[in-house]
Length: 311
Image 1 (cartoon, rainbow, N blue to C red):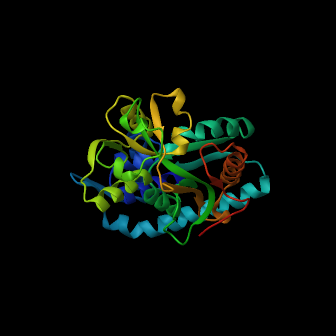
Image 2: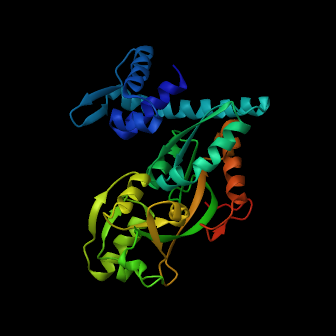
Image 3: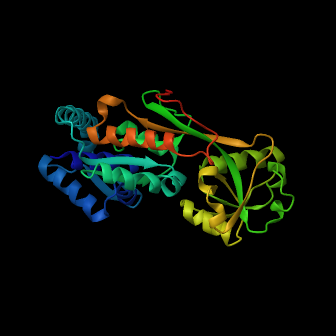
């Protein structure tokens, strides 16, 4: 059996659906099914059964699950040791990111990384912080970039930057007329374009709850670019990080700062510890940290000091 087969089995066991697991692994459903079938053939037993409600583990699958996780962890640690000896980063690195980071920061970083480390292939996926934490803890992700706080005490987090959240509004929106920052009280009754679970969405929901107002949701999406384009088309407003709004003059929306210090998010890079990282993962981690540190800061209010860590 292979590490790819074990990773496929563990991801399906966690997600409960082939389609969800395939997206998390960056595979097609047919490719994922082949991995699972090969694993079951090697073991000589069924591990998973498809049902109308999703994919469930057989008794054999339940018994095999903890052994599969330990085996994958051992393979990862062994690979990391061998790569330390060779000193040449190569292979796939799985990196989970927040939607906005994947769309608005990594395109500035990954091409330069690929030029410097042509033998390393980053595999990117986007999601929400809780799911990415679990993915890193299980070994399905090598690294993840997410908002603090980190809920799991067994993960290492290196703070990358802190930034304010701002309102993205259609061009010429009434909230831009004064030219001054606005309070959340002035914005809560607007129609909203949201990504559920995003830090800006949580802040908007808290403000609405404080005022006793039910949020007017114009549309929900799971894609940062879709959210931006909905705002540009006048469907509603959105609370977004400054990272997403730094090039708004070249895009089709206006930005309104929030008064009273506003709302901020802290962004960190997390992993399970240096011992679990391959040479390729360590190279990508260091490259991201150094690239963020070297960038100008029109979008972030404070970046981490070198080596700053939180747990």
